[in-house]
Length: 157
Image 1 (cartoon, one colour):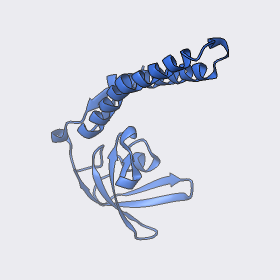
Image 2 (image 1 turned 120 degrees about the vertical axis):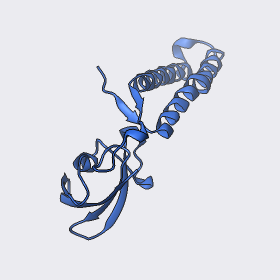
Image 3 (image 1 turned 90 degrees about the vertical axis):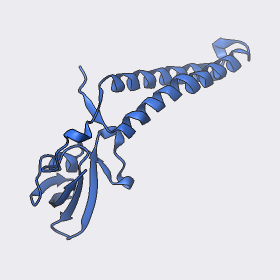
Image 4 (image 1 turned 180 degrees about the vertical axis):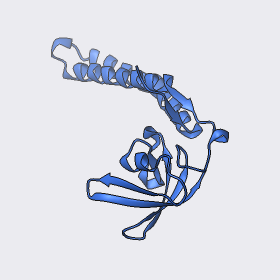
């Protein structure tokens, strides 16, 4: 039994595009590799054939996992989101109470997280610690380096 996962329109499209690419181009590439290896003769001692068959198995596993992920994926209705507290798709401006550094993050689904773009997963320690916090509240989050205290300065979409 899998849990539902919520995505932005962009994140859901990216997953669907990746699945389509694996099913078309990925499968065609593997079929070509298997055919080339098969043409080289005896299959019992053909390392290229074995490698191509292993790659095919891994590709099909990845396709299967993506299909399962998509079957449990739901698009987030932006109009129903509330900015009174931190939730998925919230853009939050935070102040580190220890260093006074100000950072801005957007909370997204695990598969969409990209720290370079300021997108953190709602399942990460910081994401979990911020969920439900309101403007002005301080989230105390346990991280490997100790405790992190982040004050919520702004919440937007």
